[in-house]
Image (cartoon, rainbow, N blue to C red; front, side, top):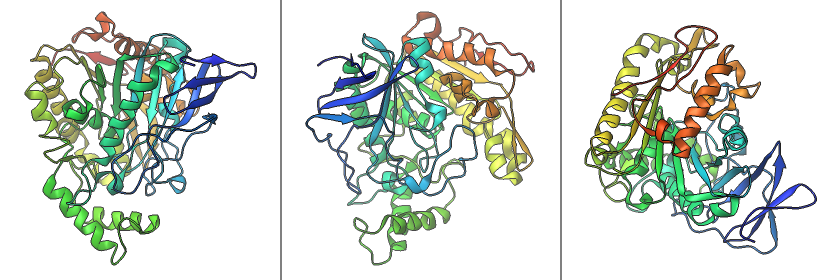
Length: 440
C-alpha cells in the first residue's frame, strides 16, 4: 500500500517504511497521531530510525509530550499541556492530510523556550490548513531542556535539533504515503521552533530536507556558546549528586535541570536553554551562516509581532517597562538583519509584522500584539472557541487573510513568496489590528 486507503469503518491506513498505520477521518481530514519517527529515545543518545513492526499500528492518540518541568505558558488558550504526562520516549509526530495526492507539506515545530511544549497543543493543530488549503501538516515532538540541549565530552550537543532532523528525514521517506510531496516541504516554527528553523537552515545535516522556511517570532541570536552549554551541563550533573546521569530517575533529572538553569541568566533574556554553536552540528552561528549564504536558495518568511515582549511582561509584570525596547532588540532588529542578509543571496524573502491586539490579560497586563498572538491567525486555529479568548473579537476576517497568506507561502505561490508584496488583512476592530509586509 503506497497511499491512503479508506476502509468501511471510516478509518484510514497509510504504509510507512516501518509498518502500517491506522488513523481516523475527522471533519473531512485524515489524522494520524503519535507516529514514531524514531526509535524510543535513550537518554543523551542520538536519535535512531524507528523500529519496524508487523500488522497495523493504531495512530489515533497523541504521543506523550517530551519530559519537561511545569511551564509558565499553560494558562494561554491553545497551549494547555500536562507536564506530568511528559516522557523521555516522546519522539513522535502527528499528520493531518486532506487525502491522496502530491500536496505541499508543512512541518511545524512548536515553541516553548526549548523547555516546554508539544506538537499536540491545540494552537498548532493542522486541520484547518489541511481541510481548507490542501496542505499536509506535520507537528513534531523533540527533546527539551537539558535532555535535549546538554553538552559535554560524553553528551552530543543539540540532541533536540537532531531529533528535528530525524523527523524531517522521516517526512522525506514517508510523507508520500500521506498524500504529501517530499520535494515541497516548508519547515516552520514559532519562538523556539522558529529559532530551530534558523538553526536547521545552517545545519549541514538538514540540507535538502526542506524547500521553504518560515520563522515566526524566532530569536535569531538565541544560541549558546559551547562554553556556556558545558558550564550549565556541569552544574546540572553536579546537582544530580552521585546519581549516574543516564540512569537517574526522571524527577531527579528535571530537578537538577531546574537548579542549573536558575543559576544563570537566560539567553537573550528569554531562553533558559538554547541550541549550541558546537562547531559540528552547527559549524558556526546560524546568523553568520545565513550572512555567508547558507540555504541561499530557500524562500523565507520572517514574521514578528509588534509587541512581542508584552507576553513576557505578563509573566513578569516588573518587566513591563522594558517591553518596547526589548522587542526591538531581541526580535525586530535581528529579524530585519536576517531578512536582508538572506535576500542578498538572491532568495525570495517576505518580512511580516503583526499588529493584531489580544484582549487577554494576566497579572494586570493586557497582551496586546504580544508574542504568539499571531500564531493561531497564521495556522487557522483562531477558529477554535477556546483560542478565540486569546485572539479576541474581530479576528475572523484578519485570520482568514493571514491563514490564506501563510498557506500560499507553503504552497509556493509566486505572489505570496516574493518579499514586499502586501499581506492583505482586514480587521473589524482597531486600526492597529493588522499585518504588514514591507521591504527590510
